[in-house]
Figure 1 (cartoon, one colour):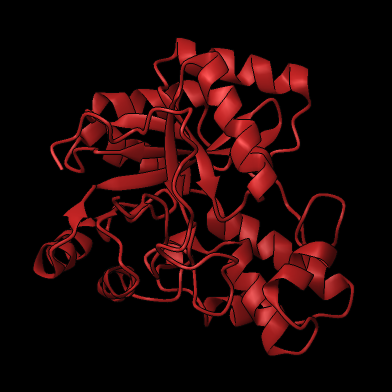
Figure 2 (figure 1 turned 180 degrees about the vertical axis):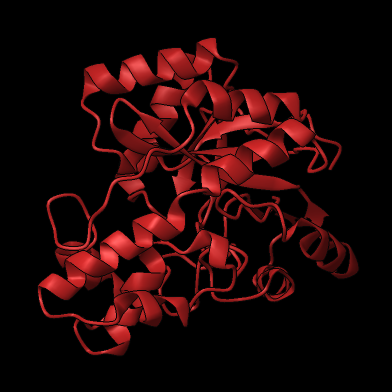
Length: 278
């Protein structure tokens, strides 16, 4: 049985390791089919592709796009994209815009509660200055001893209703799916169990996603519990979605699930890779 991991991050976005180091860890953990899905950024694709080929893994060029839908931030993964697509490149550049202003506003909120220099502290963790994010701030709060780990940070800071949270207007769902499909890719809803949508809202989102040409959802992911594997497998079957899987690996010390460590997809779904020439 193939070991497939189609969701992880490098230091090109908010991961710790370089694309080549992520590839090496994936291979060491037994991954056969691998995608690097950095946030709103495809700059790591060439290095990731070269490393995967050298290691003998089937490589899938990919990206994870931040979307604002009904005031919720949702992530859409694009698999098997053509990273030279100009519409995709320009769309991602536009989506990345505004991150610095948001980061400075986050730092101002933290300073107001007695945590100074958070912008500069977060920057020390940034591999790509265009992609400064909440994760970089979380690592700084761990550095200074404010929290024991990043999971504790996100329970107390940087999320809606907590200090340091600043919303950002990302791409629309129509834009994100359009860029992915225009680049010849497959649009996948990342970790749908994370979005705290009620049954009605989730149904409306899935309906719109499908109408726009979205074809898959992540079922097994590092953000889901085993019970959610079953839940989202049923929803994939109900809506006619293909099923994807991925660890959402960011760091050896921060990620709940390591690369390649997820169980196989449930038997009642069709894998997104079912028709790939593997």
